[in-house]
Image (cartoon, rainbow, N blue to C red; front, side):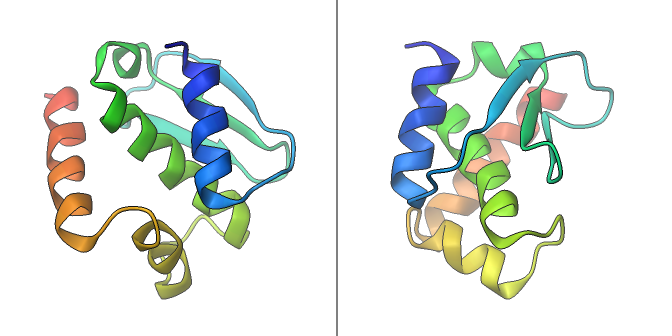
Length: 102
């Protein structure tokens, strides 16, 4: 499955219908970033080698920033993610994503 396919799945799950671009670029301290003004998600190449469920989580995370319109992790932001992943699943997926940075 291509990353664009996973992005489309994440958009569907979040009910986010605006155009979003995705690009792959080396990032020093994170696996992904989002530009709210340009609606661009940038992912580190390491993301491409992760399990699809972790990639989906990362993209849902970044899309939630776009949907809410903030780069901050507000209660509203986490509520959007929790609609898709339960709290315990979020914790597990975050741990797996963090391992990829090591």
